[in-house]
Image (cartoon, rainbow, N blue to C red; front, side, top):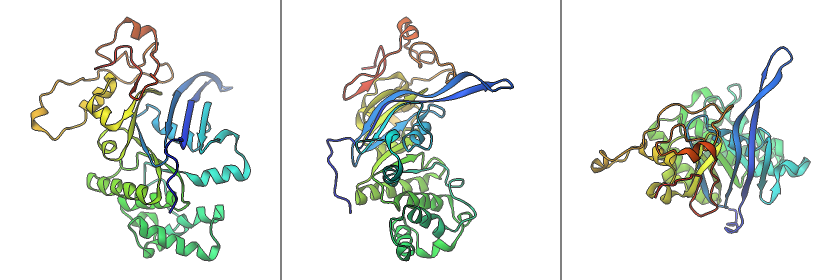
Length: 328
């Protein structure tokens, strides 16, 4: 079991991260613009902490996760993991960082190679990184299957022989087998039934406690993150608009978008069913041509002229918010 790290030093620091995708047209594929999926965001995660990144589909949260693990290189900005700039690492240093930084994908059906048995899928990263002798790989696979709630008898089966929840457990096992420090959980329960979601969330919490794991938990709704997260970052159209402790987000949201997300989250209290709600109108703007000023002003019921002209900065406070007229 890994010794608990220093809580005062962030394990992951993201600075001014941008990820743009070129828009090409014409016979010669000339670049005529960019889809600004992630447009200059900053946050950090402490060891043993779970930071939730929440927003609507298309806001850039999954792209952020992939950029952090360098499945897609950032356009600009820095990802500093365990004190090292990921872009500057090469060779053995990069291989070591990749073992410490893993990802669980959203879709348990497409994230597993259908042509390989589960035992081979789990053994592959061990063999690639040469973490254990070949004679011990099978035993390590048996151990990790038991940890995630499966048995060693499952390793001879193919992915199509498992349910969705079992496949996601296999995805968790594949991320966990390299003994990482940080795992990016890219909407790991959104494709599962509600009852199975609870089981997977409980498993993730138990694993975090046992192995001192750190999570970036990506989700499009606030239901799961209230249970698993320590802090929540709310993302809208490539920007972080609010970041605070989980209880603060649920108790006193300061950005209108956060409040609208909370009003979309069902509360099991009949006395609150007639509460006043903020309802977002219209569609999410095109990330290739985001609105001038505050990106949420086209859907915000409190928008004023300054919101249409000037983009607010995210405040450098414990409860950070990017809004000219934050709610109180």
